[in-house]
Length: 147
Image (cartoon, rainbow, N blue to C red; front, side, top):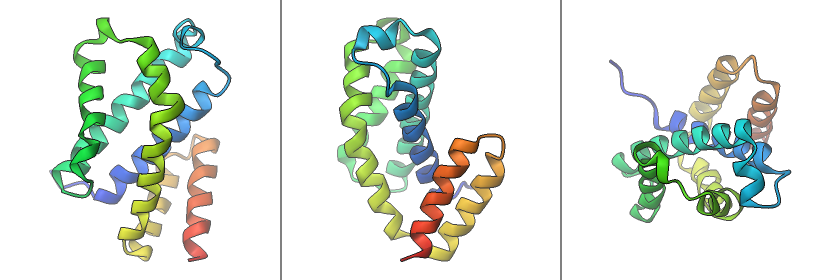
């Protein structure tokens, strides 16, 4: 099995954060989110993806160890799903994740621009069914093209 490119993990995180923001933008409380079955489940799934991708980035020494808390949170979601504290999830998606998003977007500067653009093109093909993800990736691609 071939090793997955680090750039793909970063793109996975960017997409997952964008989805979480879209899934949760209309909620004003943790209880509202918890009682919206589809948005709750979708948000939890995207948090799992972020945690797994972050674990890979940490293993590759791409991120500072301070972000290990994201992996720890993912482990709680997956292994202690019966004890997920909905207020904590709400705080993560409404506040904490925005700080991580800034760090991840800033990390795009670490990559070769041409290689990153190719990864984004490949991701656009992979997500051809999702217009919102394509729009996000096109926006990032355009920003990189203007650098």
